[in-house]
Amino acid sequence: MHQFKSINKKANTIPQFNMAKKFSTRAEDYSQWYNDIVKHAELAENSSVRGSMVIKPYGYALWENMQHELDRMFKETGHENAYFPLFIPKSFFSKEASHVEGFAKECAVVTHYRLKTDENGDIVVDPDAKLDEELIVRPTSETIIWDTYKRWVQSYRDLPILINQWANVVRWEMRTRLFLRTAEFLWQEGHTAHALESEAVAEANQMLEVYADFAENYMAIPVLKGTKSPNERFAGAIETYCIEAMMQDGKALQAGTSHFLGQNFAKAFDVKYLSKDNKLEYVWATSWGVSTRLIGAIIMGHSDDNGLILPPKLAPIQVVIVPIYRNEDQLDAISEEVKGITKRLRAKGIRVKYDNRDTQKPGFKFAEYEYKGVPVRFGIGPRDLENKTIEVVRRDTLTKEIMPMEGIEDKILVLLDEIQQNLFDRAVEFRMNNSRNVNSWEEFKIEIEKGGFLYAHWDGTSETEQRIKDETKATIRTIPLDAKDEVGKCIYSGNPSTKRVVFARAY
Image (cartoon, rainbow, N blue to C red):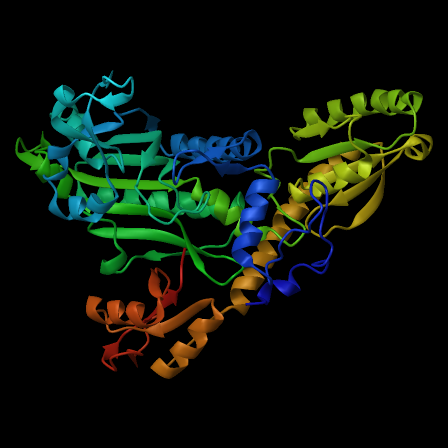
């Protein structure tokens, strides 16, 4: 696919800030382009543990900014943070059959609790230290949390329970890619309990809206809101709501899910409450979560062949200041002026860094921060001091502008907002240009090879969806909440259909 050509007009300008060879472009090798950005923008790297990653300080600062905004949004909607155990007794999973079936192949299992030194001096597992019951390393926390809620819930006065947890989880993935799919990753998972079904459904929808708000207004990534088909639904859920984003290779990325769990887990763990009518009733449940894969979404949703592009609202550094000088006297004069500039920027809440390292030349720094996606770069030299001006470069368009130092903080606030909006607008345009209706099976097979979102009729059966997946590797990404009723025929079976759903290949 080559849709991204219209986004980056300087696709052949490849920074060379820390290696002799040029980085991969999206057109040459999309997968390698992604890996290059993760590595050379210093977001993360592979660890010595298969399938696991080390999130580096720059990448973790990005995650912290995302976490901060999401946490605020959760608390504004009435949720509290708590923490639950990493280890879950194996027997807990057997209490909800569809749930264990959905996660059984991904579970890491702890069987022993001690090591010892054998006769050869090697460290081995002590066979006498076998656990009475194996422990599952948390792949998700529904089971341990609902076992806990059983002790917390007695009457309707104890409801609703609105809990979120920031944690790590382990899902033993065989094919991994940094941020997108790793054996261990960071996430948040909300788990709520309600007296009424209507309250739980409203909660699941509310959190879907929170995720969509975050994706569009902070990540600058447009998303489709909808429900999952039965084949794609979360294990143990009655309904799964999702937001789906389009990446620059035309593939879909599930960016967040919110699940209406009904009373499945309440019944499995016997969580009842005494109602106002003095009757014992099972509670109604939801769960919802997003993870560090959102960093992957930002990379693939915005970046270009010059490297990472970060939305200003989440960027660890929003403005970087690079001095341009020939001697120490010039550097001292620039640094003195920069003190006042940085103070004014920070007073406006702008995250700013002054890079006065003497180990690298300005050109190196320009390329480095361009590749790391810093939204705005200042260049200040002796002539700028004389003219009381600053060279300002914006990362999204790579355009330069000379601005007066006076009032620079207010101008940059406006510029950051412009960059944020521009990233969203061009992502919307990209999605529009790569979304289309298809009306026959032959057309579908041709169009799916081009990537993007295909709106097509489906007969509503899991069998048809599975056959389409087996033959084309495309799945139903979402059944849009705003889908219009439309009489049609399923592209595969020819059976009646009442609305179009969204098919795509996905990460």
